[in-house]
Structures are given as structure tokens and as C-alpha cells.
Image (cartoon, rainbow over all chains, first blue to last red; front, top):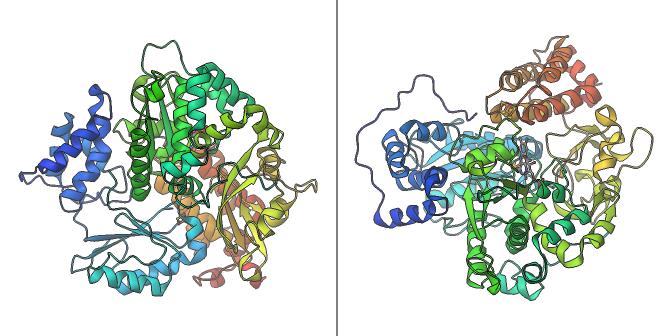
Length: 193
Length: 444
Ligand SMILES: Cc1cc2nc3c(=O)[nH]c(=O)nc-3n(C[C@H](O)[C@H](O)[C@H](O)COP(=O)(O)O)c2cc1C
Ligand code: SF4
Ligand code: FES
């Protein structure tokens, strides 16, 4: 189960007007068309990914309700999915979500130190966001990059064979918003749908 | 033992594009089956090849295909399992990144064999860049007339779509994957019914691993019999092994089944030996779910016979002294590794990834994590090892899906082979309270 905090958080509906742009809506319609007509719900995961990207990097109650309406399903069907998968965020995140792998193969290849360094450098712990709203740090399970350990992911990009120096470079580039130059060994895509 | 079937053309520049892949004989298998073979012929060829599923369970692929309910009036589906999240496993990602067309070719042939007109590739949500690569490759395949309606003028129609997951290891279990593809939480289904009769949208469905599907094209080209002659006995063909951990050359290697484990670990062609000239302590050869073996037992069976990379040789000795080939996620640990810390780490993984449907798995994984954590941090109690063995045995076999077993086996095997390390932890809290205590061997 994803380690989100359910304890005392009240997820509130603000009745904000949420709407995809015309372009996005067209993209969403194309995705829905990949599944049989009576199975629109199948598009839920891809559409939630798109919604999260379009509406500020997380899924508010208003956004989830909007997605439910688009797919013709109950609100609860969206909530239960959004709370199950670790890549859906229910609270506001930083512009860059750093997901650093903590699982066995990375851990024995220096992953624990990388995670500690990130916490020290950003002055936040697991699950927190920097005060400038730039970075959220999350420890995650195996990213399927164990042979290139230690590994982490920032938004849709993979960074591998991490060292302290490399972290400095990556965070520097992102802070200066010049992340069009990717450090060697990173993998990313601009368009995935 | 140098045979390359899947990765034969990996070094050819541009092999990820349709044109280059085609110039190397890619998609010949599609042309061949659509024009010359019936769907039954294709299934028969795969049966002859002896191909076994590469996702972990090693179930014979031809047999699985023959279970699909052909008489059903519902549409049939093929789903490619590209959820790859088992710690130590990264071969499917490598295949999709470098040879996306090898997978697509295999999916077209397989779909034809199964009477499928719509197929999905379920890719773990973290692999967004892979989704980009696959979609680009699919567009090329469509525009070259190998996908869509009336493929190569034969009247056969097929669409392949990529579907993203969103971060959940359990969605690699095939029925959880189908639930997820239907837009639900990834809760595994109770079986039977099996997907072959009631799968996606209650329709007959086959779920296969990326590597399994990718090798279907080459098998059709060389013939099932030829493929069966490669490898060793019931472990026919080649296998991708993703090697990681404390070795000199981590990466993905295609090996012919039957390669000795020792050669795989120490040869410069493969892992290149243990890094920093250290000694090898232990290996988990098939992804984190299979039992860990100490160095002596991974190199040779209890009877002293060299261990080979085959399904049979790795499981020789059962769970007492053997392990499993699993997904081929080969994790090597050097002499500095703390087995307790590693076991705790992997148990935390299973606890985190349990879907929570069955109490033995949901509660048991959390309980084991807690006990392992207290042993590792110097708070262990003398009967904790027996407690762990007992919890593991109560999870095993008592759950809806094999994640429960997958969580139990690493703990049971670590205690079986490294009990002295656990006992040392309990006896010497002052040492293990030091966070980076590493292997306890240096203190004994
Ligand atoms: C917890 C769990 C996770 C799994 N993860 C994967 C996976 O990531 N990829 C995969 O191909 N099979 C995975 N499997 C195995 C699948 O359930 C299924 O057996 C496999 O996809 C069948 O394909 P194959 O016959 O080609 O091996 C997993 C099984 C379990 C129990
Ligand atoms: S064994 Fe674990 S993961 Fe599998 S269905 Fe039961 S609770 Fe879920
Ligand atoms: S353990 Fe870190 S990517 Fe697999």
C-alpha cells in the first residue's frame, strides 16, 4: 500500500471549476477510444496521469470528481484508485518530485547514502517539500533500474549511477530551470501519450 | 554458449527504428505466419519450442495459449506484462528501450495465433520514457502496414495500445494487472477462473511477459524444433539475465540456458567478478522473491554438482538447498553485506506492496518487517528467528496470490542459511546499533 498519510487529513472539495483544455480533451478522447465503448473506466489510470500533470501536479478532490464525470463513473471509483497507486499524489507537491529508490539492490550500491545526502542538501525528510515549492522528496521502491544503481526518478526522468556530485549537478540544473541539458546517463521523454 | 537470439542485433545503430529492424529480417515472422500458417500451426510451433514464460513462473507458453477459450463468442485479448517491478529485474525495460520492434513483432504473431484483434502493453507507470519509445515504434509499425486493418492485405486486423500503470508492484501479478487495466485497484483475483477463460472484461485473455513475447518472432523464423535444441533439456533457448549488486559489470546479458553460474559470475563476458576484489557472500538469482543462497550453494548443488542457469538446476535441492530461476533478476552480494539488513529491506518492500486483501499477507508482511527491523537495530529477542520462520510459514500458501509466498521465502531462506548472523545481531546489540555495521563476519 502506498504510504500516504490518511490519519487526519480532510480532503476537501472546493467546488473549483476544473476543465481540461480543448487540446487535452481531444487527447483524452483518443485514449478512451482505445478501450471497448462500454469500458471507458479502463482509461482511468492514463487520464489521472494527464489530470495530475495538467492541474498542478496532484489530484485534488475537484480534479478527481471531474475525471469521474468524464469517464461516467462514481466519484468513489476514482478515489479508491487514486489512493492505491503510489504515483498519484493527493497533496500539492513541488515542481520536481524526486523519487529515490530505497530497495535492496540500490541500497547495497550506495542508495542509502544518496537518500541521506538528498535529505541533508534539501533540508527536508521523506515525503516533504522544500519551502520554495521546488522539490518534493520521496523514497520509493525498486524503479527497475537496479543494474544502474543507485537510481532515482525526477518527474518523468530517470537518473542512474548516482553520486553526490551528480546530484549536485542535477539539482543545480533544475534550480536554474535549465534542465534541457541532461546529465549523462539520464533517460527521459517529453511526450509519452 | 554464445548464442544471441533476442539481442543478436542490439549493437546495430538505429535498430530501434522500423526500417533498420526490418532490414535485419524483422517482421519476417509476421509475413510468414499471416501468409503461410494457420493459427493452430503457430501454437504448435511454440509448443514444439519448449518456450517457458519468462515473467517468473516458467509456465510453458504453448500450453498456456492452448487453454484460451476459442469457442467463446467474446473478443479475445492479449496483454503484454511490462510491469517489471521485481527488485533485481530490469531486462524487459532494456528490451523495450533498445528493441521495441522485437516485442511488437512477437505480439502480432502471438495475437494472430490466439485470434486476438486488440492487444495491450501494460507498462509500469515509472517507465514513461519507455512508453514514449513504444508509442513511437507502434506508429511506425502502423504506417508500414503491419498493424491496423487488413495487415499485409491478408484480412487480419490488429490494434496494439500502450497502457500505463501508476506505481504498484502487485500489478505485475496477472489478475491484478487485468483489474488495473480495467481502471481499478490492483487487487489480484481469486482463481479459477483463469484469464484464459475469463480475463480482461470477462473475455478469454492471455497475459505474457515482454521477453516471452519478444522471442516468438525468432522462434517462428528458426522453427520450434531448432529453438528446442538450444539450451538444456526442459530449459530451452536463451534467457535474459539482469545482473546487479556487487559485481564489476552489472547489466543485461543473454545467456544460453545451461551456462554454469560460476562462469556467469566470474567471466569477463558477463558479470566480470565481484567488485573491489571482494569475496562473494550470497546470491538471489531470480528476483527478490526467490530464496537467497550462500556462495557455496549457488556455485554447486548440495551434491557438489556445478549449478547451471536453468530452471531445473537452480531449483535442485528444493527449498532446503536450492532456489529458482524466477525472472532472471540476479542479485550478487559481497562479503560486506549484512544479510539481516538486506532481508529487512526486502521485507519492507513486500509489506509496502501488499494489496491488503488477505490477512496473512497484509498483517504478516508488516509483522515480519517489524521483527526484522528490531533485530537489525539491536532490539532483537532470542526467539525472534523462530517467530519469523513461524510467521513466514503461516503466510505461505494461505493467500490469494503468490505475493504472500514471495514475501515469505526470502525471510525463511535467509534464516535457513544465515541463522548465525541473526543470532549474532540478537547477542550483540552494541555492535549492530552502529548503523553501518555491515557484515557481522568481521566481528566474529
Ligand atoms: C507479485 C507478482 C508480481 C509479478 N510481476 C510480474 C512482472 O512484473 N512482470 C511479469 O512479466 N510477470 C510478473 N509476474 C508473473 C505474472 O503473474 C504472470 O505469471 C506472467 O506475466 C505470465 O507471463 P509469462 O507466462 O510469459 O511468464 C508477477 C507475479 C506476482 C505474483
Ligand atoms: S497475497 Fe498479498 S498481494 Fe496477494 S492478494 Fe493477498 S494481500 Fe494482496
Ligand atoms: S533496487 Fe533500485 S532500481 Fe531496483
